[in-house]
Length: 430
Image (cartoon, rainbow, N blue to C red; front, side, top):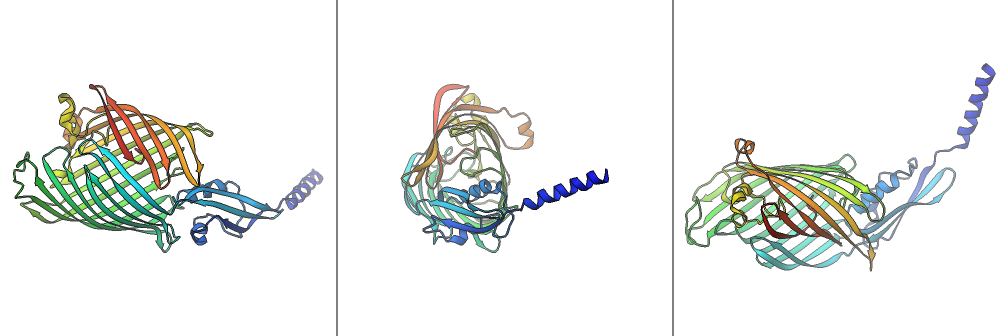
């Protein structure tokens, strides 16, 4: 027995001597005509000298793709020896200066149209500067800037200056809204968990369009005027494979926004809002044209002296298949579609028709969805106990083009009438 033990030990030693752990000898980056190389290198979870792990290749490809500045990313071993590996990172950069036509539809104001100019990957540092404006149903002017890694270890910075002119979807008044804000955040857990905080000021003026409104009687010559300073405290978790069109994983966010009143004519007070979201994704059929089951949950709750524009309206935004204006739905459910608080859940089957691929150096894709939504609107917890939900269902299309998460077009229906409600938006539902 001792001889057998010694033989086994010697054999194992011989085998282990022949197996040498490979290490990463170097990282070679190609295709980055504009992007500075250190922007790419800092996203990788390995560096020269680390043990080579093939399973990290796909992970790092997704991390680079999630930056939103590349149309295509490939990470692969370009050379291997018995003890070392050279890793190649090949990228195809997206369009940097993108004149973008803007158009969208809202039930309450109809079509808005305009243009935006996006400086993507500004200065080659993954910064984004955007100028935009719209006319038509809603007039907007906006300038925004974001840098996801402004300083230190994954410290982000963002800012926004905007002005909106819009009619209220329900009550007869027109709003002029001016907003200035700035935020800063930091990523943890290998860029999966984000904590951020922001500070802003908003000036919200309202003028009646017909001389009166329920609960707040005033004339167009005597408008209401709110001024708030607000802070934003947020936490978000990104556990999906890719951020743009996930096929697996979960993501979640929670946001607290206290508003402190600076001035109000004729009177008013402070209020706070909590926003929360949770979504999960599961690939049912994989391959070039995957079928994905996606589910999401959203909530918003307000408390304090909530201004009249702080109501939530389920139709269109929270539950597809309804008109945004409660009174323009069938009367028996109109009162279910408005409240100070809202909760909604949805499910989608997402079928890829045209896999996202490069066409003339731009990533283009197309998919179809089937969806169902359910939601509750209520003023307080006692009202929630007896609240009746509203249900919507339908189908939609998703068009994937550079710099935009998705162009979404949905046809929604509900059990209470035979009308179809069309919803056009930028981005996925969840």
